[in-house]
Length: 175
Image (tube, rainbow, N blue to C red; front, side):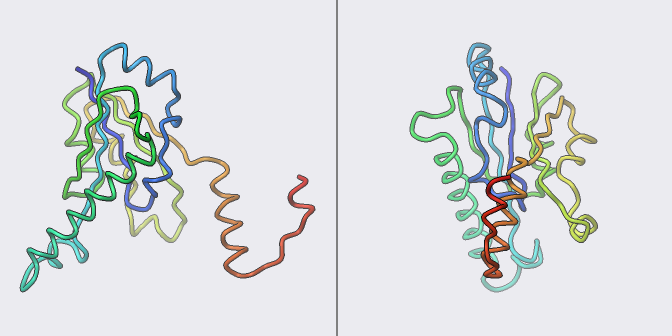
């Protein structure tokens, strides 16, 4: 049986992930083949493993895991609604880095790994390695990378303009 792990890496917002990213036809193809959709959310305690040690460390890790599970549940409900994706769905919250969690979730060359590439600025590149590049280099199966929506940059610019309380030029709307 096919399994298709998917994730929203930590920097991407899972509630923006949509079924349409791969197309509705792909979902119906997967349904006909009896495929499963595995959605994986990787989580780590604040401060990494050192942050979960010491007094209160175990409850902190348990609270972070519960928050990750709830975030995954909310993302799946928002993305698919009550009807579901039309294929068998399994959600997993895994304590690991995003790349390692995804590569570990696939079992062989018959799987398909779908990851978002996300937008990373020059300042973030040395600090946060690319999850998509890690998956492309280490996954034993085909990897489908989904670029961010071209509308995302315009939405981010509008949010910045609103945060700085800059006036909106109506001529920009006509273009």
